[in-house]
Image (cartoon, rainbow, N blue to C red; front, side, top):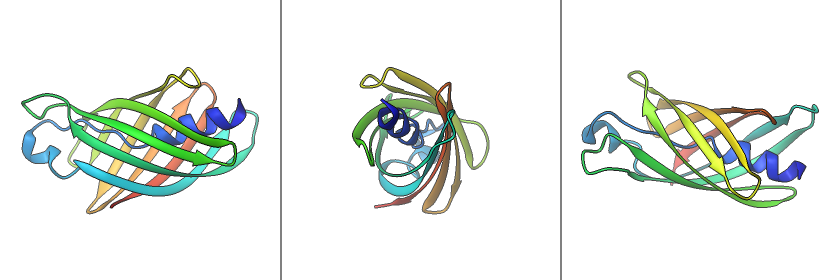
Length: 132
């Protein structure tokens, strides 16, 4: 169960919603990267993730994502939506049906790189993703 929580947190780190089709284009596509997750019990685990962003509506105001993350305990799937909060920042939610985890994600973009920070009742995490 501990590994499921770690992967769920890590996967949550890669979703966004843009406010226009033009700004959404910068996030659309495939991303991958690595980071760490810290569980509320104090364990810190490395994690690697792949995230795919797609338009969630025809206006391009919503971006949906699917993520696959791997940690020592296995591979886990997540999904979610995020909204643009500023010029280079996004905020949203993520879910994992495998581990029944829901959390919040904050993303900061810098060119072809993004840092996603995730939090839930089970812990926190940070992953740096790059365009694939």
